[in-house]
Amino acid sequence: MSEILLFHHALGLTDGVRWLAGRLSEAGHEVHTPDLFEGRTFATIEDGVAHAEQDVGVDAILRRADEAADAHPGATAFLGISLGAMPAYRLAQTRPDARACISVSAALPVDHFAPRWPGNVALEIHLKSADPWGEEDLPVAWALAGEVAELYEYSGDQHLFTEHGYPGFDAAATELVLARTLETLGRLGPRERQDG
Image (cartoon, rainbow, N blue to C red; front, side):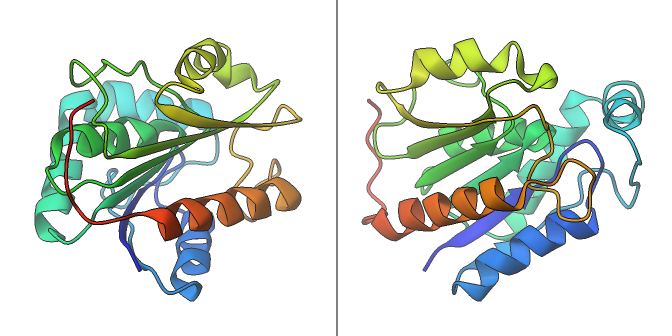
């Protein structure tokens, strides 16, 4: 079983994020949910994004993610939802023991944090095909698909579709995300790192 850091979206560390973590825990994984907003939560994506950009800043978000990774050195899988994909990608590319990055509702260029994607780190991307917040993400994900990433597209336009209790929650798509994530985690082999 894997030890996972699950990074929340722009609404903050919500009950929906904890619910998703609980589902992964039920499957036998050890899941940690770092709070990148230090207790703040938001009702809308717009308010959360404004807080992330204006009040917290990218550097602080990445620093808090690094601190979480330092606090849980056994974590080898990094799962990020929307805003949380940024620290998940970075840790997956920079931590020597990293084995998987699962990105939901976001995709970043493969060279965003490092020159190339580590050859021994699985990258899985889950996106809604008509997500208005994901217009820039889909072309990035398509470019990665088949090369370094496994891309899963779901019909619909909900951005935070895995957020249990949120108006855009898509139960069927979330079950597929969970099943595919668990399958990926189950395939992880020994912790040898190869830069590919």
